[in-house]
Length: 343
Image (cartoon, rainbow, N blue to C red; front, side, top):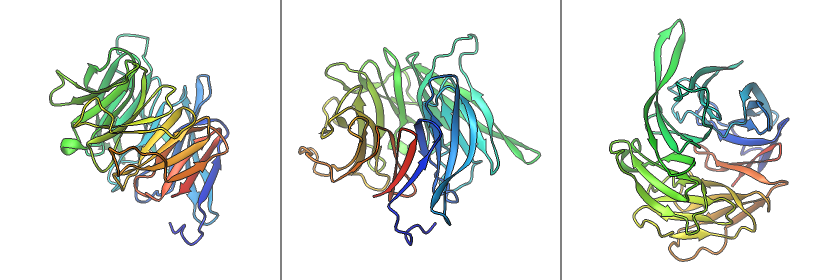
């Protein structure tokens, strides 16, 4: 899509509700496509699939479907070659896998590992393994992480049926688990980390689940809400604490001691996104001061005082995502708006 001729730096889309979850599609034939999840404090919520129309330079809603409860996270299948079915996953009360067609989106499977109970422990987050897209990991308020195996089954008629099974479930933390992310280290399939209400970052290996490594513990034992691996250098990850005004950068080779703190924000940090194409650039977003900041961290471990770029949105930013296949573009959402920004 040749947007460069138009030279627009910002494209905006207004949804009919507050936008919380958001994710860029990575398929090569669907470049400026994003999924958005509503945040409505009731059972009935929505997911919209939007795309940038090349002719009009406007975002168009391609599809809307119902979702029980707000989505805590949305991810497209990490399929940069377009060889898998066009799948989308959402977390909330359960992990759901959806199949996207041109005209409709339908539920392919609902993954629930509480088979013997009417109660479900809500999922706070999940991650989809980039090296093996048949693996997903979920984090839950019940202190566990679950690794799911996905099967794209036999072709019946012209449809591949998708199903899933629990590969392993483990008690990951002493309290609620708030985020999970696979690492690119060691082949990119078996290592993952999680953060939670106990204030720790823990590292796991699917081949040796009998023990985990604590990489970091918040000095005040504040809950850690998010973690995000560096896309180019698997030694580095970023995390942030609940109500914290800084992002902590960690090096797994030096456990428990942050290599950098990004603390130019005047309010709590809400989102973190590493650059897909550079090991030393990271974007942080803040709710109350409406700012998304891009930092250059290559001088670590020297202190990093100021960001290199700042963008002020028209509202409190809920989420930030850096497009992995289009590194010139960052998406933010605030209130009922999605904006993509050329960087």
